[in-house]
Each structure stands twice: as C-alpha cells, then as structure tokens.
Length: 76
Image (spheres, rainbow, N blue to C red):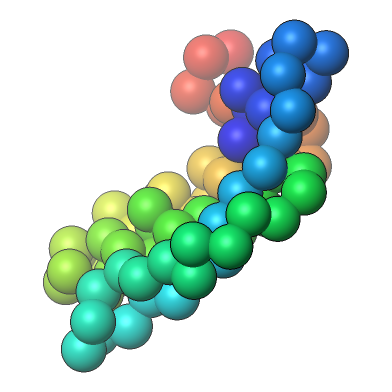
C-alpha cells in the first residue's frame, strides 16, 4: 500500500477488486479500476488459509497502525 504513495507521481495506480472466501480462496474481477486498492487481500487470505488467529490479528493491527500513522511501527 505504501508503494502506491511512494510512486504516485511516477505511475498510474489501477487495481482489480477481489473477493476472498473459504470456498474459492481469492478471486479477482479482472476489471481495471482507477486508483490504488483499498483492501488487504493478503491478510484476508491468511485467515481463509487458517493461519493462526494471533498472526492474522497482529497483521491487522500493524496495517491499522500504518493507515493511521503512514509508517510501519516495526521500523521505529
């Protein structure tokens, strides 16, 4: 997500929308949409793939921190 900010003046941001389900895993609509993606499909996929709840919760917490502060807490 931060790469979209770093490179916003260097390239055009486009994305696909995705759905993450237990039955299908991750699937994309393959329709280009303007702007950077706002979802965190990798974290959702961790949950669907039954990664430990603590790991998923920690990833969500780190992502929320980044959204609020625009930096990764782990690098401070």
